Amino acid sequence: MIKKILVIVLVVVATTSNAQEGTSSPYSFYGIGIQKFKGTVENRSMGGLSVLTDSIHLNLQNPASFGELRLTAYTVGATYNNYKINNTNESSSGDNASLDYLAVGIPAGKFGFGFGIVPLTSVGYELNDTNGIDEERQFTGKGGLNKVFLATGVKVNKNLSIGVDFNYNFGNIENKAILRRSNVQFDTREITSSDLSAFSLSLGVVYKTMITEKLQLSASIVSTPSFELTSENTRELATIVINDNGQEGIVERQDVAVDDQDIDLPAEFKFGSGIGENKKWFVGAEYVYLDSGKFTNALFNEDNIEYKSASKFKLGGYYLPKYNSLTSYVSRIVYRAGFRYEETGLLIDGNSIDEFGMSFGVGLPVGRLFSNLNIGFEYGQRGTTDFGLIKEEFFNVSIGLSLNDKWFRKIKFN
Image 1 (cartoon, rainbow, N blue to C red):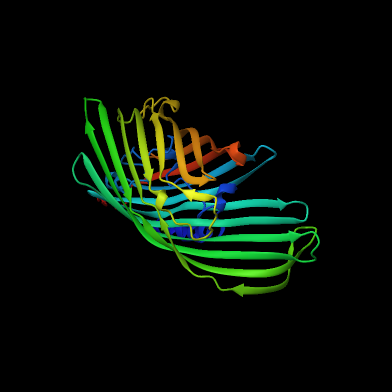
Image 2: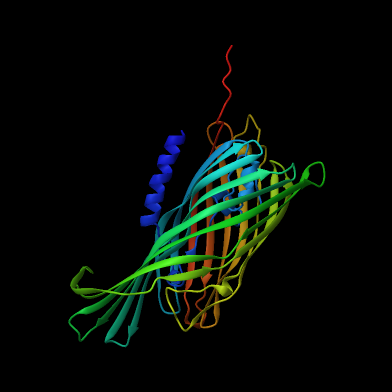
């Protein structure tokens, strides 16, 4: 089993690092792309909450959760995204799909360990800028940033768990710009490729206490310090011809020297709390502060772009009718729902680009032990059509497997 999981991890790492975009947002033009959700389908279906932890599910947003594991858990998730982009004059639509995460968690007494891969940002845009009738500029981008993590958590006592995860962040972003003039035979193309890498870590705390015989109060804190992302850049200039099928033929090309740069990525702080009845229901809320006012964007310098400190607000929970029902499968289904509102920290011409989403989902029991097939749905919007900007509407369908097993069994002989 371990060998199979390691093979899958290596395959997914290779695939993710070379072919993962997962967005068609024009706002991914800025910075290092649109932030991806860094949790499981279970979390996403509850508005993105990271407060809830238990002994059988992985919570990829708080490393302290690994200290609560009592069964080996492995999880994988993917999302299908349908979107519509519009401004005051026109609109377009499309879809895409992406891998969201792959992770394994292993309990070892009071300790728990985990490793996996999670996409962090995504770039995927196509933009046209027409200057009168004689000139057109085409901009396209692809790629993103991913992280491979190794986490450990420890259950200090029956109420408190703490944890840390160590991350290697890596990825590639390619930005292409083409200038076309109606009275010029050849077109001009510029391609800038940035290889990104950095090490980072996150610290997490989970505290739980019974406030009545049935009700449990939970609180969590996650802190991710600011870190410096190294960008190794290359640039190519070329004279090209574009045929009727959109294929680009190179007439002449040359490499242009461009400096490598460091990008200061902002610190993040999350605090959440909730109340519920164990294995029955839970309601929680969470606040996230992102110090993105100090973000430095070394890939593009646009005069009309700036960044501010951002906040995120999340509310969600679940309901489980009867987890140990022997006669009703429906009673063992977990029902989840949530809402989120986020400031991205990006300002265009002084206008904040914000985002909100409403989500719901179900956890369907499968196989033995406590394994689940989790399905989540989310509707959301990003941006606005006011002030000449663009509004995106999106509908996400996420599917994840949360599987459990007992490793390191003691062998008994009769």
